[in-house]
Amino acid sequence: MTSARIHGGGDSLGVPSFDFSSNSNSCGPCPQALNAVQQANVCVYPDADYIDLRAQLAAFHGVSVGRMVLAGSASEFIMRMTAAVVRSAGAAGATKVSLPKHAYGDYQHAAKAWGLALAERPDSAQLVWACEPSSPLGQAHTGWPLDLAQQVLVLDGAYAQLRLSGKPSLNVAQLNQVWQLYTPNKALGLTGVRAAYVIAPKAMQTSTQGHIDQLVCHLNQLAPSWPVGAHGVAMLQAWVSPPVQAWLANCVPLLRQWKARQIAMLESLGWQLLPSEANFFCAKPLQPVDLQWLRENHGIKLRDASSFGLPGWLRLGVLQPSAQDALQMALRQ
Image (cartoon, rainbow, N blue to C red; front, side, top):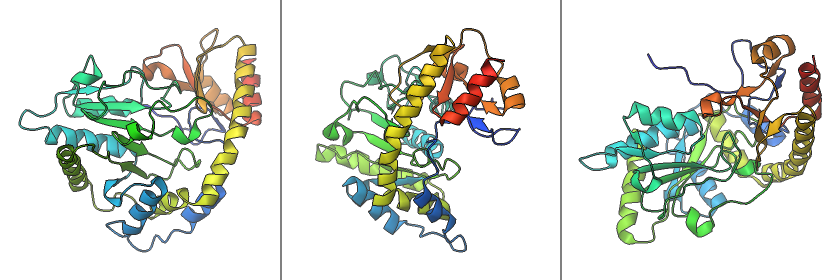
């Protein structure tokens, strides 16, 4: 029996009144995207080949349609990509994976499921996972391979659209050398809608392009029929529309203000905070906090960062001032 995976969000007590455990955009849900999801036609199957959706996503990113791969979610793709690399790495198979020091648990879960060992250096792994801004720290990724195109390197951009400061580590040319994974539901405040997409690399050499095309084909073969349902299709189509992108751009300054306020509040309580470029950060209270008491008596959920390899630390999403005030009052009791 496998151990339970730890996530933020709803739990056995339902939906928290003040959910600091999720990294979802607290300005959301995006009205235009929510309306699109609510109006989705769930009485028919989506196009099994997602021709229009793939074309819209490709046009949005300025890439060829052949580079687009759809996924049921980031977690689903993490499992599928791991399986594809193991099965596509030749007779010997892939043996090593490189993970960030502190990272989303599904990377390691997939590696264990397929028997991959953790590499000491990213250059010695066949599969490399990166996330920027990272979770749980919200910081830039460190430990890039010397040659980005040498291995299968997947850059998880789950929080790329929720970057509040700093800048990406990779330029456009470098991004074209890696697999780019996007999950817009967090930025749109619609985490209950599961859908993701991936941009495959653009090879610099013809011989390398053959390997990329083969892996894209393998990923598609491993996918179930209709990996993205009608609600996910509607969300992704809304995602690439100008009104939704304008709404998201307007969220960023407000999230910066809320983040500064939340940081000041916690520092006034003597908490230690780590730097972050995203809409969440890690903090360590002076004394341990009874998370269960907060959840049961105040409807407040915080995320214990022990599963990320940070015992004693908490990861907090940035919420609106009313939620911050509720947390401050509860912590003072």
